[in-house]
Length: 410
Ligand code: NIG
Ligand code: FE
Image (cartoon, rainbow, N blue to C red):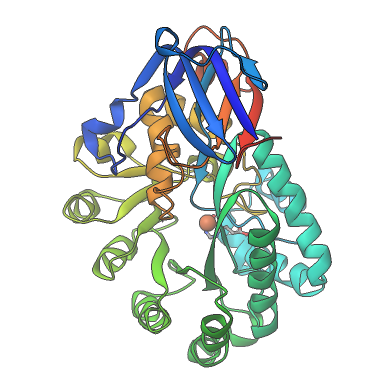
């Protein structure tokens, strides 16, 4: 289908060529006021200011008077394939238990793993499909999804097959990450190498053969996977062409950032507990620092020091971490507001980190993350609003009117 959107108050995120944004570059969100954009089938074919529009008659046109148009969000870190929910733990936390205490008593990730292993592949697909539909409505056009709630050969492969099916059926751009190393299952609590051997000898060969994942992740954290265990798993994953994208420095300053950078990770994610050494390490690397502020919000933790990262010229991305334990929300507009309010990112910085840099953090920058001719037609059309900053300012209000994904209005 061919669609012309015209009289756009502001077309934001326009880039002739896209690059990964570092430091100060994050503060610039190029825009055209009083603009049009033309999409043909599923691709952006042209855009400009209204005085340059010479298409007079157009069958499918949308009048965007007073509205903003911007690229869809690229959510580069989620766990949105999961079974059921964990609001009972949420209440336990309100009453005083910590995330680590809940995890140590069979709650947390292990609780979700039990639920997942009792759920059929079809049911898991249906639950995940609903979540995909829900995030598409709030403007997400590309998403990375991790395994990690199976923790058995069968369960991990089941999750990855569900993600593969989502990739085939959905209009969203989807990347899959193998996170078998999310937690040690109960049976391997005191036999870490036993579980790691399952990951390396039984899961990875099938994942490689069936092409079930794009990336490998490890929850590198005290009480979960140590530095040397993380290295062992990342090294094994590389033999199947899986690049690392790892969970680092969420609960403790455990050396995860350094190990990610050493292994050329695409991104290191979380970073609530980093210090000067981690900033220095990221500054001199190509690894993207992905902050997940809705997880810090939900767990009442300190937010990652994003301002410091930006001052140090680090490439910062933002993602939701959508999962049942630490961020049961895949709502990107909420994440943008939280990033502005709590981490003092400007609206432009937050939007860049959640679009173009998010695209780089899952290597979909050639098809998503900016308004660029030739990229996929993944667009957000807002309700009439006075400015870009109004979006995070008026937090919690649904300001998205329409979302176009792969050329289709959803
Ligand atoms: O990214 N930190 C590890 N994994 C998830 C939480 C998983 C869970 O609690 O179910 C996260 O926050
Ligand atoms: Fe996560």
